[in-house]
Length: 459
Image (cartoon, rainbow, N blue to C red):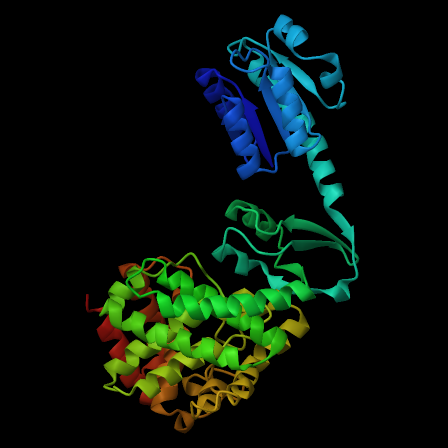
């Protein structure tokens, strides 16, 4: 929730900011000292849950200004601050009584009980405003008119072109993202901490969004260069959109074009950073999840193919496309970090989710057949979670089944799942290599593993 404080006294503004920040961690505080500033803030930074107004304004009439704020933002509670005479003389009874939650605070700011007083009054207003904000946003809906989108998708943006909803009960949704209005990452974090994993969008809006974003992603990838600091973000957003599109609408001509552009972007990025260490140090680790693991797998597999002496662009594209498709059908972001079929972390999921996890290599292999310009994708993807000594899944194949390109891809996706979301440093490398020694120092995997260790030791 946001509040706007209107005052010409900078010292008192800062004092109030500190008090509110200390007592209300999730309250966003804005301030203005003139009518023009108030209007600009209301237009660009709203909506606000309530307002605080200094009744001792000199350049503006606090009563008229407050009435104009109501006209611009709708009826919201006001907390008027000032000496008793100023509040009585300059705030009309009509305005003060227009909302039963309006209240007043007496100056001076340095009185002993000021902090406790402001805390109590603001708590009461926030409780009312939160309830009103919540209840006014709840809508009776037909769930069949909506489709899920992963909460993780919204971390890559700060505005979204369509309204997004949270399920309260099966037929009641609350709007938590307004179309084309800024939202904060901290807001998403609050829902994530409550174990919210998806939001809901109207089906018609979702189709429009996917079609628009697919075309925008293709244009962005053609326009941007790997030297641009946001290029990894463009790739991550593009992979996220691609996965959503494939799940909702299947494989189309535009999907094929976007896959080609993403794969080409992966190859260009790997080439731009020259060494694996430099690449990983520039990678935005905080975008953890399916899209991030896909991108990391692509970068690693393309790099290792070069270490193996493979110069073919077709081979690199094949590895990059496999990285994009491998986890697209996973029901939960966290599953992208699981590599062993008996991992205890699978106990956190439902039986349906676990079944989808075990079957996702088969799903990836099947969908890859629609990308016919790249041969043998289905074989690589069907076996991409297989490990030496039959420790992987879904079929626990023997050592003789592993082609060298499968070893490159399987090792790359394993490393990507371990690195995704973690700060890359020397200690991370040491621990990762030590852990992988037991499983990857055999057969064709050994040669690829040695190439990886060589890359980790080169700056």
